Each structure stands twice: as structure tokens, then as C-alpha cells.
Length: 623
Image (tube, rainbow, N blue to C red; front, side, top):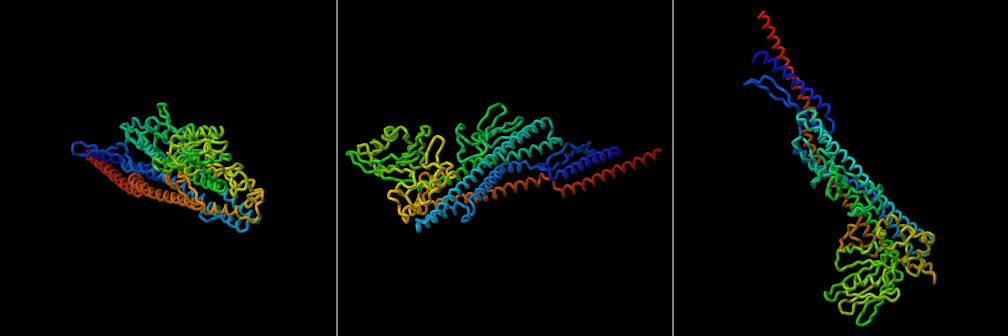
């Protein structure tokens, strides 16, 4: 190799070393920059024959394990999902409070039940009556407060969806912009490497919100799809919109029919102009947005249902009067007479009959529903032998009978007729069915009407009857509205006095005994919408047992969510550490590389100095 070639080689080595030093400096400066990946110089040896004569740099490369990166992006949505679920369920547990602590539902129910027991030992005592009133008010207020907490959490996740949508749009817009900038740039271009870092960071942010799949096209364009195949962004980006109503209440519910939904709807607009329901299209099952939707529309709605069932059961347990029908026989027919004069919207008629052909017993529930828009009622029970039907009473008894015969006559082998407000429930005379029992459940409307039942808990100032309208069920959100009957607040003696003519004796414990029994030991059946039992075998138990059951259910869900979060965190963190091991800047490694580069630079400089000396010596000899 000649001196000129040696000088050339040394100079190219110094230039490559200078580029390397500059890149080390850049790596070190960005060691803590989010999304920055370590860069290395691409060096190529230029040779002539068997002799290497120079080295050139050909851009930079990112140190990145794409396989681990794909794995991390696949697991990141699960990490965001479990984290959000665990966080909100933990806050829900805080709303319920520590069992046995002051101000909790459990304590409020226990205190009210104990006050009724104390009232039974001293029925005429104004102090005992006042204590029972105060305990009832405390229980109602605790239900109100817990409902506010649940709806505050629902509003929080609703707002979080809105924030997440803004973040997703910003990430997709950035990915689109960078894709456009990268077109025409070789992947090894230093500018391209920096842009790809930015794009990866935006993709990673998007993967926390929505489960995605990324495809890198030949033009270095990253095309992002949901895992269900919806195209989100390439050289053009889709756009998400979320039309939130803001603050949610217990009556703010999702519905597949957008005209009936009263919560925010998540839509997607594509570059071509078409739009669609992103939740239905995307089949979101993981990611932060999916977690928020799950919490808003299912988990927290179930929590509210649990509270509403408790409130409704309490109110009905103390106010419902069930009157058995009078047996009648009109050969060849037989059945029962039921007086429907006091049936209010939401009140029920209960009929038990047996199909003789199959010897199968059936339960028939007739509910007064005076809003035609709410009819027919969905018969969603899990037991095919239990039927619920809504009947409009507003047109009078003749209309009621017509509706019943049209809806049930042929299918049940029953016949309905009336005399004034009395409903006759008979078999059809063909020996096809037997009417076993019939009763009417009505709501006691006043405090002292001769019945032990009284409307102790009301819906604000209105009776709680379980009314059903096209706007929904009275039960929905009732825990947030339940209060003690204003008339009882004015006159607490009605905890004892249930009749005015003759006047109930002040020492009579009949009503207080009834109230205590209903609250302490009576068994009730609860909707499977509470998460307890099933449609075929719903959960039954006392109010205290029911409260303990759903609190335990919520506690278990919170514990499970935390465990899932911790497990997913381990997976995500392990993958992140593996990715960081190859892509993140290690200061020690960079310093070692810098020392090596300095040595290489010094060696090349020494070669150049030696060549210079040799050339000077040659020139002197020539002279």
C-alpha cells in the first residue's frame, strides 16, 4: 500500500470515527428521552483488490428487536385495561368503606334493624321512635351517598373515554404525518431514524388505548389496524369522535339503539367519508378505552343495580300488602277472585296454575303498566314456566280483561272476566289447567290504614311502587332518591300507630315487630342483574345476607382485578426490559465505545503523522 493510500485510509477512518463520536454524544444526550432508540453508524469498507483502502459511513441504524416490540405492543393494551379496571374497582371499594366502620351501608342497615328491635321492647317511647326515624334517615342517606359515588366513578370513566379519544386522534395524526415525511427517505437516513423513533412512540401510545396490529410497508409506511382488522392510519388517518353528555346519572345507560342510548357514543370516521359505531365495529375487548366502556356500561351499572335492588326491596318489604284471592267454583270452571281496586302502576297480580297435559306448574305475574310505549314487557326470565306480562289499566277493567285474554288465554288455558274491580281468574272449563293460587300485591299508601305495612321509604315525596314506563323502571337509580316518608318525619308515632279507629294502643308492638321481622329475617328474591344467582335460580335471602353477598362480590372483583393487573404488569415490564436491553442507551456501553473510538481516532492520527513524516523525509531526500 502506498503512502497516498495509507493517508486516504487514515483520513477516512478519522472521518468515520468523528461520525461515531458525534453519534455517541447524541446517544448519551438522549439517554433519558422517551422513545429514543440507540443509534449505530453503518460503516462500509471500500476495497481495491485484496487491500482495504478506506471506510465510508452509510447512514445510521436503530438498535431495535422488532419481534419483542411486536410482543410488547400485543401485551400493552392488556396492561392498560387491567390497570384501569383495578383502579376504578379500588375506588369503588373505598366508596363502600371498611366493613363495620361508621358511615357504611352495612353499619347503617344494622343500626336501623337494631333500632326497630329496640322499638319493639318500648313501642310507645318517643325516644325509641325518634331513634328509629334517625336510623332510617341515616340508611337512606347512606344509600344516596353511595349512589353518588358510583355515578361519580361512571362520570369519571366517561370523561376518560373522551380524553383517550383525543389522545388516540393525536397519535394517529402524528403517525400519518411521519409516514408522509418518511416516504422517499431511506431507512438509514439519520432523519428517518429520528422520525421512526417518534412514530414508534406514537404507536406505543395508541396501543395503550386500542389493541392494534402494525404492518410496515415497503415505502417504510407503518399501517395500523385494530386487532379486528379496522384500518386506523397509514398515509391517511381515521378520526374518532365521542359525543359525551357529560355528567352521568343512574338513568344514563347504553343501548344498541343509538336513539335510546343516553351515554356517550364512540364513532369512527374514515378518510373516504364513511362513519360507523367504533365499539360495534372494533369489538374492543382490551385497552384503556375498552376498560372504560366495560366499567361504564356493565361493572358500575351492576354496582348501581345492587344498590337499587336493596333500596327497592327495603321499600317494598315494609309497604307491600299481599292479599290472597278468594276461591270460587263455577262448574265446570274453578279459580279465584281478586280485588284490583287498589292496584297502582307497578303493582302485581300473581297466579300459580298447572298445565294438566304435562303436569307442569307455571307462575304468571301480571304487572300494571299504564304507559303503552313500555309494552309489551320483555319476558327475560330464565325459567320458561315463569311468565311476566304488562297490562294497561288506564282503560278500565273491561280493557284489562280483554288484554289478559288476548295475551294469555289460549296459551295458559285460563279465562279472565270481571265484575267491577273484581277480576275472576278461572280455568277455561276444558279440564286443561288448574288454578292453584292467586294473589294481589299492592302498596300501602298511608301511614295508618289498619295495615301493619306502611310506606316508610319513599321515592322523594312519592310512593315507591316499582312503576315501569318507556323512560325506564322506577327502581333504576332509586337508591339515589330513597328517603324517609315526609309524613313519618313529621309524626314518628306512626312507627307504632297503624290504626286510628280504633286508635292503636301506644304499647302495641305489632307494627314494630312486623318492621323488625321484615328487615331482619324475611327472605326476598333478587334480580340476577345484581350479579347474584341466575335467571333460572335467582338469589334469595334476607336484606342483611343480600348486602353481605354483593359487598363480598365487589370485594372479590376488586381483588381479582388487582391480581390480573399485577400479573399483566409483570408480562409488560419483562418485555419492556427486554426491549430496553437492546434499544435503550446504556451510558457505560457508550463510554466504552467512546474510548474505543478515541483510540481508533488516535491510531488514524498517528498513521497520518507517520505518513506525513515519511513524505517529508522523501521530499528531503529527493531535494
